[in-house]
Image: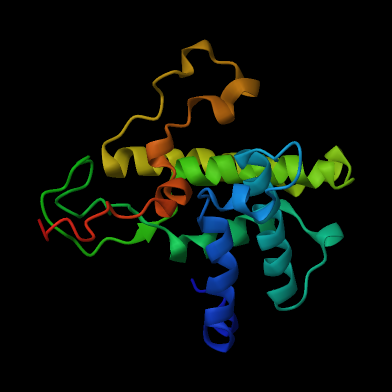
Length: 205
């Protein structure tokens, strides 16, 4: 179910490039504004990048889509679009490694955005939407469909990867559900910015 055939072929470098900004959340931020007295936090920088990426996505959307007409359904479309840049292996039920947290061998199952990344991303976009002066009532990132989708992705990935995301959430406080119990290791957006270990030139002793 490929929603973006045009996007794929006409400017794949382009869209990958924009998305690159969403996907790295490295220490780039501090270098971009050394002189400001209060450097924005990593969260603020990431939120601004995510917001710009979403804006870019709307611009490339066919037919073009304005933020005022943007609904929960479009947000879901955006999340599914991001899956192509994901780094998290989500096993299909027929895969022998389904439910296996550390599969011993490669398999052809698809890579997706990790649930923790999407959950944190939606939290940031939801905040950015209101900070940019849009009314809470029309916030597409807070739409029920989006919440249900995230819950579905969480359950699906939890089963497929044999991981429980429920650890700290005993208190059942739905409001707290957001930032607090995301284990950073599930967040592929964050994991991506780490270099794959510095095995550069340790050899010449």
